[in-house]
Amino acid sequence: MHIVVAGETSEQAAQLQIHLAARGRDWGVSWLQLGDGPTPHLDALAPDALVCFSGTGWNRCNLMMHELRERFPLAARVVLVPDPQGEEMMQALDVAHRVLPEPFDPVALIDAIDDIVELRSLLDDARLKQAIEQAGPLPAAPKQYLTLSRLLRNDSTQAADLVDVVTQDPALAARVLRLSNSAYYSGGREISDLRMAVVRLGQDALRRLVLASEVFSSGPGVDEVRERALRISRLADQLLPEAGTGVAATAGLLSQVGRLLPPLELHEPDGPTLLPHSVAGAYLLGLWGLPAPMIEAVAWHQQPARAGTLFWVAGAVHVAAALIDGSEVDTDYLRRVRKLHELPRWRALADADQALAQA
View 1 (cartoon, rainbow, N blue to C red):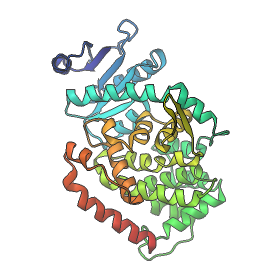
View 2: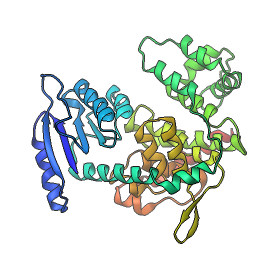
View 3: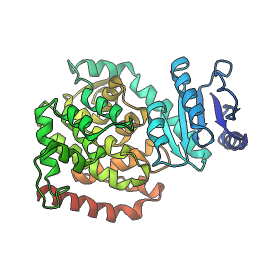
View 4: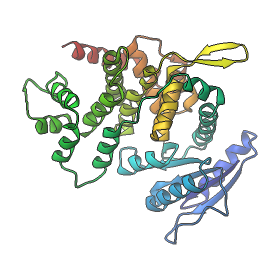
């Protein structure tokens, strides 16, 4: 394993090398300076993983990540961001397998690279692909959601542009109006104008509603699955506000996508085992080309300890899904990531969401 660390100084690369040696990992580490010169090419380095500090030059970091994805598609891509709520976070989610908050934590980085490799091995498993093929035709990628996401990245986008997307689907337009007049958003003032409804909901809520309407549009019990997904989405967003950009909310919504597929079996040496809906959903998101951090969060939300040593998106989705479903929260995991003390407050948030849903 050869890791290239791209940043302003070589200090982080040296720290990483020390921690790798302490763990007995025979990984090579190279440092690549992100200065004012031209963006360096990666061919000569042939990295197995690229770690980039966006605070030292996001444009160069972004270009390098795109080049790595094209020339070394199997290499792990990790970006560290100084502000998890900034614009760089959204852009990093599009190009990186994992986005970590600064300051630099060598242990978290090593765990992240291990997780990326493990998840790739899981989703590339021939038995998994064979099981998914048994499902027949798979749900299509959410085109309206992808269109809306592109519009929202453009600073010149107006509310009228968003309304144009919504009105392409009358059922979606009806859901937008209904949600905007719900107890969550109305404040007692009912509206019937779609443009006002879009403004009232805001970009993040609109994006989630469009995604839910497209993804959970047909199938047995789809209305129930959609409502559960939206509730998990809202709660996950509250559990991880520092993530910004609605990343936890979107991952929470997508955590239920595997339920769209029929029960599937993996053919193991000891006999067939039922494929978890989390893994099936992650595979489907990969086919749709959604960002890698979303795929990882969906894959591991039932086993959050496998998503690293930080409480991040997979952890938030795990807690939200467990509280909404009334299933068991992994308290051992929360204790390890030092979040167990938050569980009573999170339960209260879930109860409040339930009360609003029934209002």
